[in-house]
Amino acid sequence: MTDKLAFAVPVRSGQAGSSDRDRRTAGDEGDRIVVLAVGDMSHWRTSGRDLPWGSQITFADFSDITDALIATMSPEVVISPLLCRSFDCLDLAAALCGAGFRGRFRIMAPKLPRPEVVLGEARALCPKIDIDLILDHFLVTAQVN
Image 1: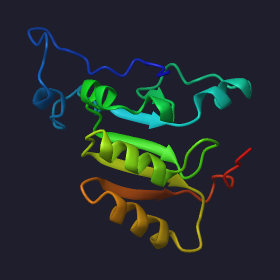
Image 2: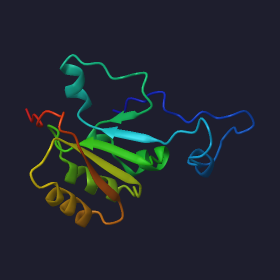
Image 3: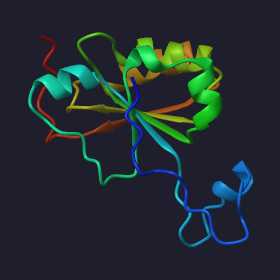
């Protein structure tokens, strides 16, 4: 189930029902890109953590990734960890590609010995998606329970 957060782009007066083009104009003050974070939300909650309700991101489980969700949200960026309990970044890349996503997919990963291997495989699997890694030496190695 998705956890819809306060991420909707603010609609300025006179712009009711603004178009995707209006929403995605980066130079306009107050406009924000649509970001979808995919992870294991049920595991997150059962571990006693709260979702960051003040953020500008919509959170979803892997099972929520459907044609309808991608069409409705039209996310410009999807972010996820390299590994989760129920999926990995390649599973998600394939699901996004199958759902018609054509934006940017950013994979958050700890420092990897050969990140180009993961990146190359993901890009080969889904050439129509802009895929890149966000390597963070502060991330703890993925815990798959």
